[in-house]
Amino acid sequence: MGGARTIELIVSILMLSVLFDDLVGADGHAHSFQHFHGPVTGDAEEVTWKDKHGHHDHDYVAHPHYEFSYGVEDHHTGDFHGQKEHRDGKEVIGEYTIKEPGGNVRTVKYRAGKDGFFAHVINSNGNNHEGGHHH
Image (tube, rainbow, N blue to C red; front, side):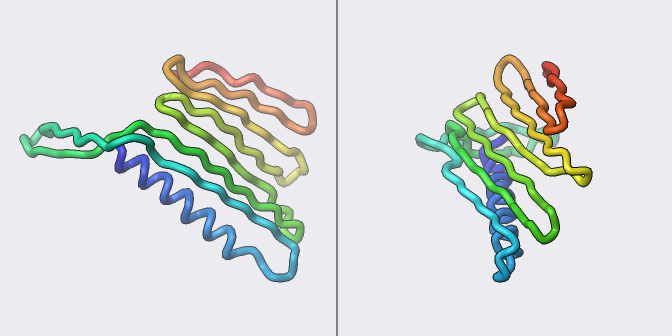
């Protein structure tokens, strides 16, 4: 993923978290939170290449290093979900949680890196699933 695309993804996540903050009413029935730090460390380096049409394209890359978290707890609607993630270079570690309509709380803990993607699914009703290894 190019540096500009990574930044676009992070900006989108931040915009969603601001939207969640704006949706919280003054009646005290809901709570939301968001935190972000990143997206890169060190100096950016310009990378240039020719596309299949012979045009010169360029982008900027730097060492990806970020962390974010967000969540919503709405007692009025029953909407409870959140995510947290941190990345340092090619290693990503995170988890997300969602309360499903039937009351089950599903938490997925994941990590990804040079060895692939691994996920561990935990359900509050005891129906746990070990995630596989995916490339």
